[in-house]
Length: 318
Length: 272
Ligand SMILES: Cc1cc2nc3c(=O)[nH]c(=O)nc-3n(C[C@H](O)[C@H](O)[C@H](O)COP(=O)(O)OP(=O)(O)OC[C@H]3O[C@@H](n4cnc5c(N)ncnc54)[C@H](O)[C@@H]3O)c2cc1C
Ligand SMILES: Cc1cc2nc3c(=O)[nH]c(=O)nc-3n(C[C@H](O)[C@H](O)[C@H](O)COP(=O)(O)O)c2cc1C
Ligand code: FES
Image (cartoon, rainbow over the protein chains, first blue to last red):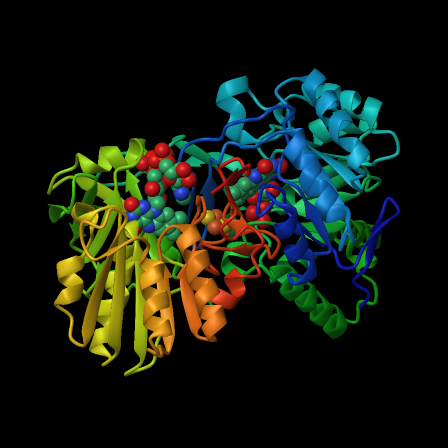
C-alpha cells in the first residue's frame, strides 16, 4: 500500500505527523522524530509573539488511559523559534508545520508575519488551547465569530502558505466553528486539541495534582472524541478541506479509523511516551500491514471512507 | 510494549519517615517505600501546592527510599523545612541507571549532591564484590556528603578533595582521579555524578585512557517520561529523562551542549 500523502502540494512520506507541543522544543528533537522516529511531518510547539511563561510543575501526569497536561504553552518567542526552524531547514528531513498561538486576533496575524519568512510548509493556528483559558477567557475555538476573525487575520498575511486551524473538541458545535473558518479561507483543520480540561486529586493531601489545578486531556481515552470531531468537520466542509486528525492515536488501526472519519494526515503526541520516539515508524508499518491484508492500494481511498460507505449503503437501501 | 510502568507517572503522596540534616545546606529524606529503583535513576518529588522537581534516588533498599538535596531555591528551601510526618508526593523511578559486572574495579567520582546517587551505586556494586575507589569533592570539609557511608562499604577506598584543602587533596576530585590513573591503577569503569564541567573533565580522562565511563547528566525536566521534550539535548535530540540521565561518556561527547549550555523551562539556552 502506498503510504505517501500529498496535501496542498506538500508530500509526506507517510501520514504520521508529530503533534504540536510534544517534543516540539528544539530542531534536534524534530530532526530525530523525523529521521530516526519515522515521522512523515513535524509540528512545532505553539509559538507566541512574546516570551510566555508556562505553569509551575507538576504539569504533566498520566495513567495508561489518559494524560493531563497544563504546561501552559511556555515559549521563548519568535527569535528562538526562528533559530530552531533555521537549524531544521538545513537538509529538512520532513515537512515542517509551524504552530502559532496568541491572546488577540491582531497578534495571531503578527505572529504569523514574524515567522512566515522561515518558510514552513503549513501554518497551524492553535485557537483551542484549554491551558490558557484562565488568562484570556474562553478559547477562540469555542466561538464561531472569534474563530472566523482569527482565520481572516492569519489568511491576510499567509500568502501561499496553507493555513490549518486547530479546533477544540470542547466547542458546542465543532461543525459550526469549522464552517466559520472555512468561510474566511481556512485551507484545512487540525482536529483535535486536548479535551476537557480534566482534574486529578491526590487523596492523602486532598490537593489537585496539577499546579494549574486543571489540564487538557490526551491519550488513548480521547480517540472516540477525536473520531467524532473529525467526522463532523469532514461532513460540515463536504470533505473539501484536508484534516490533520489528532487524538489518542497509538496504533496503525487507530490511524486508519481517523482516516475513515476524514483525516488525510495523522497527528501523534501522547503515544510517544508509551511506544517510544519511533512510534511514527511503528504506526506507519502497522498501517502498511493492514492495507496489504485488506487489499487497499492507496491510503487516499481511506480518507472519509466512512462517509462514502454510509452514502453507498443509503443508496442501496433506497 | 516496553516502557516504564504507567502508574509511575502519577504521583503518590506519603509521609516522610525521617529527616536527616547532612550539612547546613543539605537534607536527606527517608521515605517508607520502595520503587524498585536502580542506582542513577531519579524521581519527581512533589510538594503539594508548591512545585515538583527531579531528584536522584540516593538509596532504595527494597523497603525504604532516600533522597538528598541542596537547598538552592524556592522549592528546595521549602522542602528543607519539612519534618518527619509531613507529606510529599513522588513519581518514578525514571531514566537509565549505572551498570557493572561482578568483581569489577570501579572509580566513582562524586561532586556536590552527586555523592547521593553515587552512594546508591557504590552500595549495590559492593554487594556484587566490586572494588571501589570513591573520590568525593566538595568546597570544604563540612560540605562533604556520605563520607562515612562510603567508608563503611567493603573493598572501598575513599579519597577526598576540597577546594580549600580543609580535608584531603586541595583542589578538584578529577585531579585525584588523574593521579590514580597515572600511578597505573586500571579501572574497569569510571562513574561520575556532579557539576557538568566535572563530568567533562572525567570524560576527557576516560577517553584518553580508553576506559568506559558512565556520567549522570541533568537538564530541566517536566514530565520525566519522554513526552514534553524539555530535556532533549543538541544535536542528538535524545531525552535525558528516558535515554539518560546516565549516559556513556562516548555518547556525552557527541552532545554539543555537554559542559557548554543547558535550556530552561522555556527552551532558552544558558551557559554553564
Ligand atoms: C535528573 C536530576 C537529578 C537531580 N538530583 C538532585 C539531587 O539528588 N539533589 C539535589 O539537590 N538536586 C538534584 N537535582 C537538581 C534539582 O532538581 C534542582 O536543584 C531543583 O529543581 C531546584 O529547585 P528550586 O526551586 O529549589 O530552585 P530554583 O531556584 O527554581 O532553581 C535552581 C536551579 O535548579 C534547576 N531546576 C529548577 N527546576 C528544575 C526542574 N524541574 N528540572 C531540572 N532542573 C531544575 C534550574 O536549572 C535552576 O538553575 C537533580 C536534577 C535532575 C535533572
Ligand atoms: C504535553 C503536551 C503539550 C501540548 N502542547 C500543545 C501546544 O503547544 N499547541 C497545540 O496546539 N497543542 C498542544 N498539545 C495538544 C496535542 O498537539 C494534541 O492535539 C493532543 O495531545 C491530542 O493528541 P494525542 O492524544 O496524540 O496526544 C499538547 C499536548 C500535550 C500532551
Ligand atoms: S522531562 Fe519531559 S521529555 Fe524529558
